[in-house]
Image 1: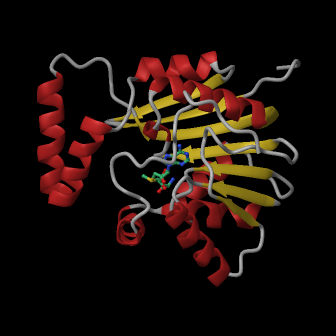
Image 2 (image 1 turned 45 degrees about the vertical axis):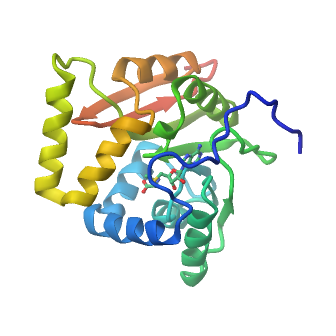
Length: 238
Ligand SMILES: C[S@@+](CC[C@H](N)C(=O)[O-])C[C@H]1O[C@@H](n2cnc3c(N)ncnc32)[C@H](O)[C@@H]1O
């Protein structure tokens, strides 16, 4: 495997919550099962990405593998990657216990995964891209573009900051106070760490990055701090 140059970003270094810690991974899994309706999320993503039986799908930052498990029932193969060895171990164990045989797990990330197989029909990544600084988000999106078939789609969901805010101090303080009230101290602390140490970017920057990577943005939706984008790699007949 060729070595990256000395200036290349080390995406395996944990920022924010340490997802190499098994306790954190177990807690993350439990919380997500409680707070999210993954079944419904997967249904929506299958429709948006128009996933078919013979499709190859890549999930980047799979975490505990819940989405990959659900998608695998509707396509030929899911390649699920994550920079945390612990997450991959956890997700793989879950897949084995559910006798899922068409998910390929790799301990790799946006910047280090190399696809030596056919290009993908669809790529999905949720709550992971904010781990990279903006320049490296650009490299990551270009790599995704390169791994997709013409006509293939990317679904990206992540924490993105709105740009039409007059007072950011007020804005973030209110978010922390509301989170404390609704989900408790641990979530509020994690959001503080997110804002302070992770690399969520602004809405207009994210849209610019996607366009500059070559994508046509079919939709960009914003709901508080959550943003979702459906993007297409156009073909010559589009
Ligand atoms: C907040 S979790 C989200 C997991 C899952 N996608 C979900 O929606 O629940 C973020 C995940 O992204 C992974 N991650 C962080 N940086 C990454 C990178 N550069 N490439 C791939 N995965 C990364 C972390 O290890 C972690 O599993």
